[in-house]
Image (cartoon, rainbow, N blue to C red; front, side, top):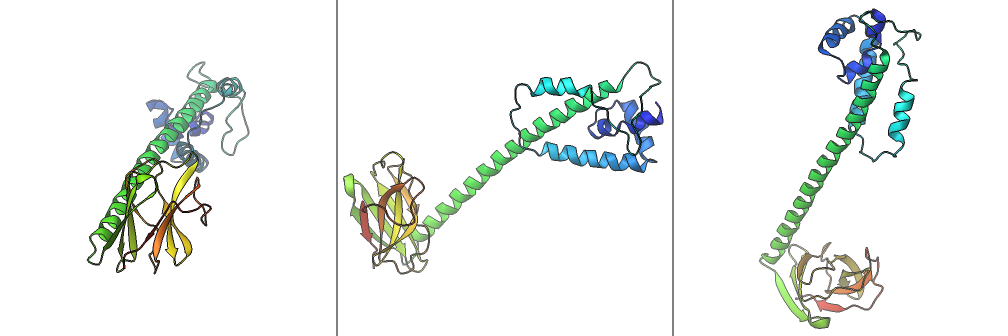
Length: 250
């Protein structure tokens, strides 16, 4: 294998596409070639970025386009003009290495994207679990607070609602049973009643008839709470007549 051959192996070496014999020869060359060492480092960094890319389904014609064009692309030697390659080991051409390089790049991108997706899915699940655990702890803290006060009321449609307030913790919890689903595309939104001025306290799960919700935000002197039917995603201010109003226990 000539020096010119070795100069052209940076990409294949960076993607582990060389045989053991070729890798050994290239590593000896790499120790004394600063240009190849730099190019190899850059190619490895690029391959790592490709591996972290989000996976996407390629266009149906992408494979044929790549295969058709790969034979027309020559890898330049670092710091040298392009030369016709002649090997001593036989008729093996650079086309083989280019095919291997293209295949490795495709595999690195696909596998890397899958790994990122799986990691993100696991991370999202952990985040949801942490939020659920935190919400449960916050609700329990209000319900078990020494100063917790409770008030229950009948709501529209036969539902029953109970609000628990802890002034010391400045938080409130609302529990409901028998809640009907809102109209399609709508949600139930909770509000703090600041003596006639409504302040958003979050959304309910519109698909659950029974649920216990920690009102978002501090009680901050609110006199009660209300529930309205709002467009999906909620509103900054109520857009409909409250379906329920509960005064907070003193």
